[in-house]
Image 1 (cartoon, rainbow, N blue to C red):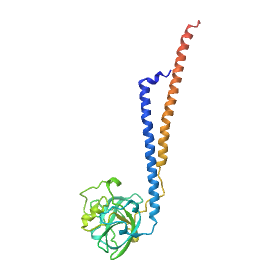
Image 2: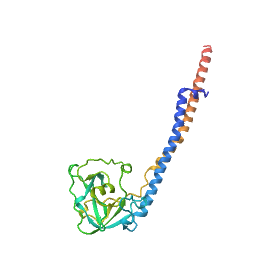
Image 3: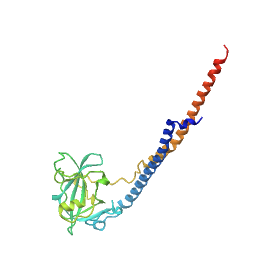
Image 4: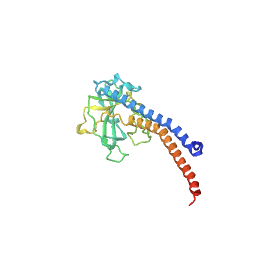
Length: 264
């Protein structure tokens, strides 16, 4: 009765099921790892985002990568803005998903080193090839506070670092590139300004990172594992249905000759 399982159709169907089960299990674990990474990220942000700010030079230095433990930590610095060498970061969105620019301004510290300050987001009102109008930063000695961020890379952000852009426009924030352009020592990474607030809310300060949502990854993991469990269950259902259909067909064939042999 079960010899049909050796047919080409059933062998292929069974092999597909055997392949799908481990693939779906692995996809479930992939989503689980993404969930765990999101939870760990949220915990890290919650620990550092409300901590008392410390001087930026305690956590970063020229030519040094910002350690993962210091990302999002609030830091302060005293110095002066260098608006002459200000650049804008293209294709950035605000909290309403409007496309514009981030304003990146060198901030010269008292010892001559430079800290890159992302002063916030502005709308792209004119052509992309033109440098936008940006409210000037404060003059003279000021104190700035912000969240310390690591240098941006294409691998981490998915943004291609396009070359040949219009003057004073960049795609990614890189302290190394800015150090080369300025000819000065630039602290690794940059800060997203949180204080002081900009007059008239322009540029718009960058919103704090979301660290409350855990996303759908755990639900996706469970979904993939349920699919994996459903494959053998579905295979069994199909086999039983095939057996039932074959038995019914055999019974019908057996009944037909008997009916034909019965005298009218």
